[in-house]
Length: 314
Image 1 (cartoon, rainbow, N blue to C red):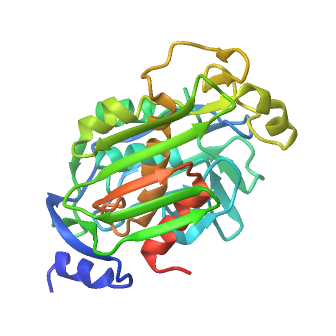
Image 2 (cartoon, rainbow, N blue to C red):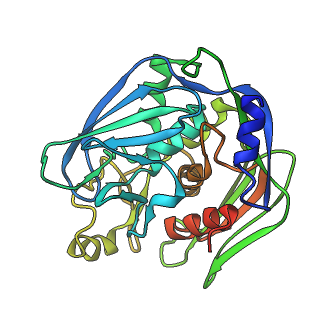
């Protein structure tokens, strides 16, 4: 049995998708990436080293010698970010890094996390400027290479093609997806209390790596100034500042201009979606489904619910 056929056999768990060849080979990074920065929620410093990996290994975190696959199977509910947890250890705020890896085509890699507090069973990925821009630039600097297995053989890269419509919702928040020949994403947000945001949509055909790196990756996370104190009282955004987020006020509008694009908040939601949906990937496959995806007022929790539905997880 060929590697490609074996991979297809391994993916028959969900009747909602059909795994097909992308016509490309699985890739990994051309060298080690190391970056240190402050985390958004904990405010702590952490160092991330991303290492090349064999084909079929996929993307996974290595924290305190515990291996945590970048998989929906290990997602833990957490506020304002995506957290992976296994055997009592957790890695928090993984979405921007995973979005950069999925968006640039890094199918296999080991992500080593170094925490200054060796007794802490949790760690958080640095936030940098609140976007995926620095991760993409670091990946572009080392480049990509075809990933080989232990026997020096390359492996076909598969993508999940949606075969039936999917819908997940909570209140007026919704994600729907429909079969398509290419990846289309439309994302809407609505903040009626903030006139500088209000109701906006951004739609795109995600067809090339360059589109992601230029149109999506630079978009920063955003927040409402009047909600900052409440979030900090809840133990969140201890490392947040105007250096790593776009800040809007209900009365004063945008507090730290300029925006990088007119729809930067919407584009950032697509960045988050790509990172969260990348958790559908297995064994070096593509995570984001080939589908027409429409999301409105989504969240990390709703993104995870969407991936669980794709995976056939109740």
